[in-house]
Length: 382
Image (cartoon, rainbow, N blue to C red; front, side, top):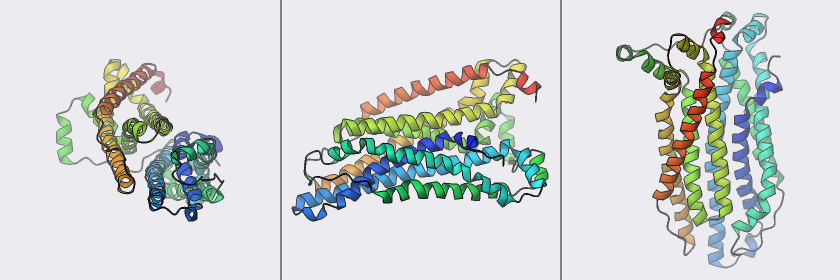
């Protein structure tokens, strides 16, 4: 079968997202399970209130972070499967022509779930290196009786085994759906469908220059990349701004965890998305260079269309982190006294926005330099 372990290794982005999701969820859910064990030791009403808040916060944090990252991993999985089928149309067409059924070919895609297993396994077991410090942090003021750290195997099932099996099954189902095309169509290398332009769209395109139309078509050609680039900006904005607040509301350790996860997710997602954009437009860039377009014009046509999307993602991430922290603080303040009031941190917003703009433009500059190295041989040897 043409699908091998080395193909699954390319899904490192899914592994990293799975790692971050399980790392965070394991910390909070393992603490929650161990926290339940001391419930009978608590008598005081204020302590019971604090106990209830800890349980709720663990569930909310796990649900929000895990759910958001789960959705991202699913979309990224679909993108990789579609990309793999597009790249290997001819090989898959030959298999279908030889009599292989869609289901038989699709079964080989279970290996794509391996990337999830790698990420969830590393995330689960690496969380235990931080677990002792995390338990101390969650009961820093010794309000609760001592919470004993235990290894809860049930989390291995729910956070490692079941997600890996679910993604393997999802890979088979989605690939089966994408393979429901005639063998001849795959052999000819045709796509799923051709986008039919509306009359209004055609009229608008007539007023555009070639570079403007190319910029627009590049963005529209891969809708999934719009999500990845906006998600990268979302992660950076939300995690970095949240870390400033966590330094005051929680602790330096929690702020460091959030910063690290935010940077890893943002850089990984953005790197994969922009790399895909450049690779998919290699021939277009080479032809533009042949016809005398400058490096700046090539870069703007291929990459600049994503700049507004990235700042929209940043804005959504800013609103998200503010709303999330506002909800969390309100939950605490209902049951616990002297909880500091949370308000929007304008200074943190400005710092993060400037740093984001600098980092984003540096990444665009890096890929502009990569575009410069694209040779005309790419299209001459095709």
